[in-house]
Image 1 (cartoon, rainbow, N blue to C red):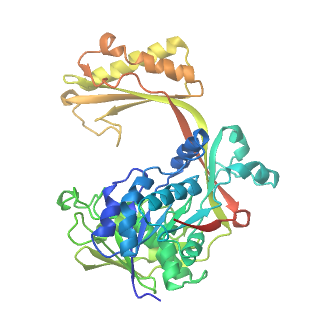
Image 2 (tube, one colour; image 1 turned 120 degrees about the vertical axis):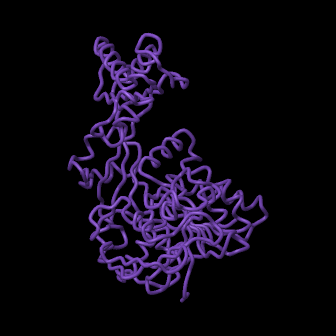
Length: 455
């Protein structure tokens, strides 16, 4: 049993800083590199890609990144857990294998593929069994939007990844697993934790939650003392130093920018937080009120005392569906009377749309710089505002109505209030709206698959 393992976060979302994972591997000691790519809407994007090209449906930038990383991973014996597989982990694994072969690493790289989360092809079967997939927020049955569904994925936990590590995977590529499971799995594997060691599983879950958003816990997007955080052009991404007891330290590589502090880690703990006593995952329920944080040195925060409880018998299902169309247009009005001009432009636009008889489910106007973020501030000196961005968005099931809106906002440049700019991007783009439908499914209906392929 290992005394301590070091698990580094390399990506907090699909589109995160591409230098981070490479630097995590080469800038200091590391046992595991965790990379989190998926969010709710991401699955729908990937499903669309796969519908156009069956070989796609995964985070494409993961592949060139792995080409850069593979020689270092092999040399330093760093293992990877990544949910970059999206809705096509097999395709992602094959693309990475091709890179390994081209680098002359044949026989040196084993890739574990974790699948079984994608239930889109099984929806009719599951409906026939009586599963209604009632919306967790509204209680409505999924049948209301059956024809509009684009993706449906159950959140797998850490245990399928543990199996992949046990089988010798150097790189684990998964579909929709929990963000926390990418960190918890190496801890279970290395320390031999059992499925009912709830406190330890909860500790690994909290560790995963702290580093799942990358540098957000090492100074990025940090409110407390943000002006004094050093060298954020060179941020160190977080590392968990974990022990078999479940206690761990949050840190980063020496010589990197950013900051690891108790306030910063606390802010990350509050991210996406509901009931702090009941943070539910497929692996356990973690009680965030038991967490104890303590400074353990420069850029080191110790985390202890975490309590947990038994896992539930259900898995969360992330479903996306088409919810019509939208377009968002902006214009900037300058001093003097910037806000008054922006308000008049909004009145003119709405009047023209009304006369056209267009079908909109909603028209939303925001005055950015005045009230778009926190609402109108009392005593705001409207007459002295230097500039205001008028932002108008529309939503409709009728694409032609949204398209006509995109054509009506541009004329305001010449036939609306004066001192306008900021329309160099042209007409607003009509976009499909992807809506989110959260639901539950019994664990007995989901059958994860784990297999190993070699370069």
